[in-house]
Image (cartoon, rainbow over all chains, first blue to last red):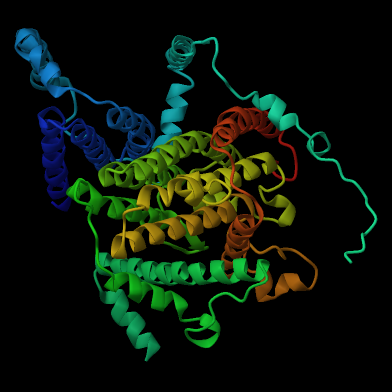
Length: 198
Length: 348
């Protein structure tokens, strides 16, 4: 009873936040709505007792990805008028994709449902879904998992390779040289006799 | 009388009992934060051959309350071209995660507010959340100093979070659990059984990253007074500033408690199993030991502030990305070998 109450509260916040993401003119508000959407969907997952997934969603998307998003959005001077121009041109295509996805979800929910149990069995007391997830990821799906890791690695390398350009004529510090500096290179201690001030 | 209260308390609904304990923990935490500010001024004062605050109350003991009252009654100034909503909500957003994380801290063997399986991850997720308050404050203020401070602090926090996360992976491997109570229990035995020795590089990385994560000296470029006035909270006054202050010190205490929990055995006693002392209360695991260890790390935070000059910004980034992350990855490999060969006394 309480659980379904919590579910409906957070589900409605989630939907409102998702609408806010595409509705707000101000890109910073849109990004913050996306953060709210991630947090509320994490709450829904925790409600399903999938606490590992819920917390990881907050950790990865809210803690890292969205921070960088906000970073970029705040620095850019985005012209919203220009962004809006393409809206009518792409609207039919977008509508088609949205309808396809909605149809797929509807198909899965309404026709495939027959084979699924009405309710998943509740986990036992000492069940830890972190352990269960690890056990599945590193045995049954180990190749897919490692493949995903390699794809991410390639993406990192590509992103760095694309953005790192050596321009001639810029002044940059050679940090290795700076760190290797010793005090003796910079100052010389001299012992002098005390002088008579008079 | 006391037993009457206890039986009456046990009759209350579960939610009310929990709420009572949450309020108790929060009140104690806020008092600790208040006295931490006094401690900081006193400790740094003595290190610089000054006395520190000594006017309000006996030896300045009431100084934090005077400060709080002053901040509460000050006018709240909202800059004209700022984003009002975000400007007001930013300090709240930085305070909430700083307090919410305390739910999973194991204060003594049988007291923890929320004994959840993924406690360690929860703590990491919520500490990463605190960056929003800083970024939003910087952006909403609509001033270049605040914005520069927010950018610096966001980049710094994202960078050091990765090293922190890797250090936590090491703790997880050694403890075999994400539950903070079980991590402490895994360090039982004696001082040698604590994770300090097998995880020493990770301990250093975590502690230093903790300094950077809470924007403390020598990593306090986010509020570098000499360059960008006060960074992200330059335009905040009164209660808004007080909330940022509260969040910063609650986060410092949190990092200290987490370090004490994960690397030096939390509420375990260092005298465990030692001849003669082993039978007294000193050898029993209790909140006392957690408090002692936390206080030590807290003192280190203040000590570093009085000792080290501020890091240069590009060197902070270099330290985070190019030094700490490789160290943690190498040590995770070493740790894997230690665990695989069941090296005593930790992993047998």
